[in-house]
Length: 344
Image 1: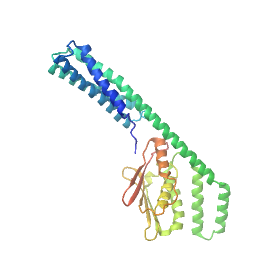
Image 2: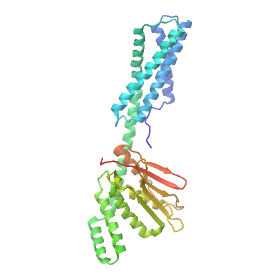
Image 3: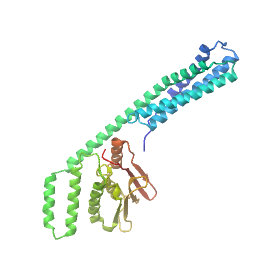
């Protein structure tokens, strides 16, 4: 789920904002008109000015927060700036036109066409000056959030590299040992398939090191090897269905994503004859690669670092700002993975 970066008003900011609104509203009738401070005309102009200033100040802040939350400062700066300029300009013109109409209906003032244009232009300039403060704060907050996200991802990557190094005792030794074992069980097709699956999974883990994405077809193949290994242990207690149309095989996802999600499902759910674990892998109508399993959590949970799903989500956000959708229902656990149409 995307986090909205916005300049949230605190109590101090609210006090400063409303003090600024009152001050600006008071200065406007004082320098623009010559009515006595205690007169009815001055009070009406001040009231109109307060309403105008409050609407512009608060409305501009809302517009900036909304657009900054919708368009990233770093990934879509041109679109963000254009929309902000257009939205603020139209918004200010509407408010200033309302102010002029109120002045001409509730005060003795009558403005020439030139004065009306000057009012609107001055309102836009002042609005952009004030809005630049909120835009700068929003920019800083998104920069800080991205920095923290990058640091967290770097930490996760370092931990993953450490685990990989720790587990890679000697790849060549392991592969040679597996080849020797293959020759020893050549007359046992089931054992041959099991060893080939382990070998394929290990080779894929080594070859995908350093790659940001791989094709869906590669992921499906290695996920199939992993499922075969697990079914050798669980048999019919584990049922995994792959229903991914071939037209999606050329799409891309981060490596080992499917294997990790299947592993999580096996690790955290009961897998028994009476309660088989059923995992379905398919592409949804909105073109997400979906990994779905029936939810039957273990009472005695296995030790877990709790970073599997978080790591997958972080990789997607880091690579292309795409979100992984995680849904936990009463009897279902669903993870929806965005698909990339090409290597990124």
